[in-house]
Length: 187
Image (tube, rainbow, N blue to C red):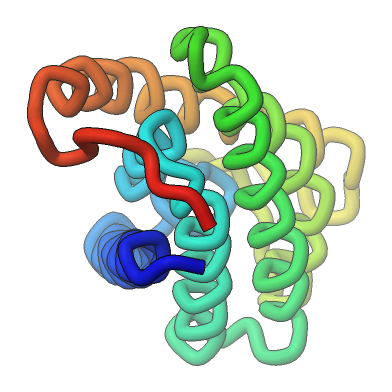
């Protein structure tokens, strides 16, 4: 591995972890919980420019999710997010890299992959914390796993799509015109 690849990996990991934790701290239940609206997901566009984004975003996700365990009080259940949330991030970054020449298609990876994986384990964590109601309502989904999964699928997909396409795609266009990622680096 060359030093530029390692440097990009480290910078992306640190930036994603920090940005995710800021989102969790300031957006609370909108960034972590039944609704997954994480502004830090805008950083998935880095995978359109460099393969260093695959390990960088994955490592950043692992770090953010590990640090979130004591912040959210999830205890051992938080390891589900560390393992499966990070797996979702890794798969999404690999999807983007595979379709990097078709950015609109490539950015569908994080939307679909996160919408499939995150709602599969998130209800377990939320139930372990003693709650699962639809945010901003009194509608309880506790104990009704298929509805919790469906709700999580829809809200995660919407949150990801808004961040990735409304914010991320314009960021990609702007970065494409800049010299930030002037050429790919390889491991």
